[in-house]
Length: 75
Image (cartoon, rainbow, N blue to C red; front, side, top):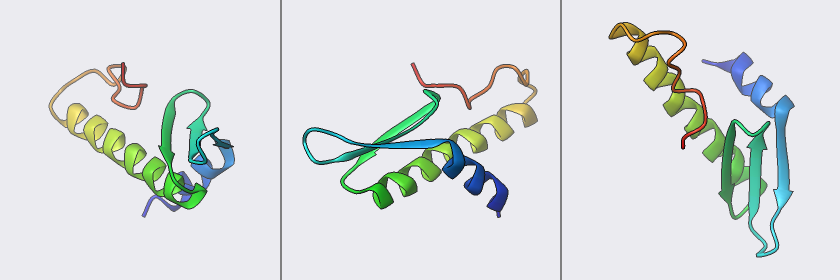
């Protein structure tokens, strides 16, 4: 499930090794996670995307505006 979304995230994900040796992955400043390895970052990115997508779907079901998106960055 979400096969296309997974591949789309990988196409726009930018991995960076941080000075402390850990890694960060960022999707065009919309999603950002850090972890000890690029693989760990990838899983954390997918988890963050999954959580935001689920919240957006539930919000739509509860009658919230589609523009009130949980897919936007957390502030």
